Amino acid sequence: MAKIQSKLHNLAEREKKVLNGISDIRRFFYKNEIPIYFISATNFNLLGADEWIKGFKYISYIDCFDRQHPNVFVPSELPHEEFKSIEDINNYLLEHKEVSDLIDKRAINGNKGKALFLMFDERTEALAKELGLEVIFPTASLRNHLDNKVTTTRVAQKAGVPSVPNVLTKIDNYKDLREKTKDLGEHLVIQTPFGDSGHTTFFISNEAEFKKHEEEIVSEAEVKIMKRINCIGSAIEACVTRHGTIVAPLMTELVGFKELTPYQGGWCGNEIFPGAFTKNIREKARLYTEKFGNQLREEGYKGYFELDFLIDQDNGEIYLGELNPRVTGASSITNHAVFALADCPLFMFHILEWMDIDYKLNVSQLNQRWNRPENVDGWSQLVIKHTEDTIDTIRYAPPTGIWVMKEDGTVYYSRYDTHRRAVESEQEAFFLRISNVGDYRYEGADLGILVTRGRLMTDDFKLNDRAKLWIAGIRNNFIGDTPTNMTFAQNTIAEIGGFKLM
Image (tube, rainbow, N blue to C red; front, side, top):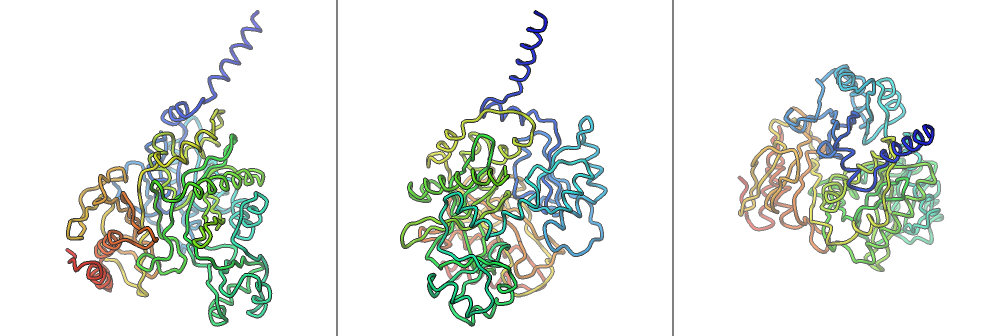
């Protein structure tokens, strides 16, 4: 009898540790004691995670909040070699004594905790291990393998997800390019295997355009060459779990706007709103994302990922653009929309996969619920870069917080806040400052990110007047040695109605 009671007790204990649905999952994280860190240049990609997960902290290099955010730790600046990547920044942070002291101080019964990164490499993994941190993402080598645009296309083929008509091949010269792509037409898009926000996407129609990028193209063992289509970009985030692939709603993408980025084809923002796409396109995107996520699981991947889809304006077809096997710049939009707040943000399902606890979840029901337009509210974000071919030092930078647009189109700083939920209307916006006083302002430098309610593009996917006013207003609040921002702002106001900036 004692043995039977013992077995029943052990069974009951195991069943207690199974989280049964959304309510249990939320409660589990609200009571979490294990330290969890997001280590990156800024906390933007997982903004707000600390409000959902007890014990969650950000370790950042850039102080976007002037040391007012309660859960952002920015160590003192130490001499270092020039950073060439986000990985370099993360490795610098992991080697910083103030960071290791923080991790030691917050350890629970010897458990140093878990770490997430936007970008990391093998050195990051080794440094995290030395500190006793568990990296809760698939390995850097697997992420790097899947991040290759050529590999992504082949994974899509296996998953049954269509890509724009393309050729995957090595290119030796312009003549070789034309011979190998004769079925793709005159106008081509060439992508090298790795790149970010349009830096390594080339639009080629003639030999002169090819010559401009020839060195980068011919140096690769293989490139992806696509037929150029009349398309609009879209983005969708998802999470590979043990119970299936969870898929968030499809978002529009802002790409290549000269007011925001100097890079043709460069990502510069997103929108999420009800009815953004037809029901047919939404359903196709969700189905393709599930298929792709299930194939990723076969490749050994689990957790958060994002897909870019290209929607052909001429025939209505939807094609896979590329894969980002990580949290992304769109994650803040995904994780703060109504569907996520009503259930759980997508990043929580990612972290749950590494929390050593069983859970039950009906992924099919969750996906159907998240795909309904009534469960989506309208938000937009702009990633504002310095677009002029100038270099100077910033002497004044606008603070992070809530900004307000007046009726005449001017904008002003209203109050400090750490979260976009404080935005009450389309006349307000949350601005997260990236570049600060003393930083160099150079072509392509990230100035900051602006998030507001409603749309910032027209129905034909052009920047609307409100977007242009916000861009001009924020730019005008960055003052440097070269006052190019004032000219840009004045021209923008004049273009859309003769407003004057404050």
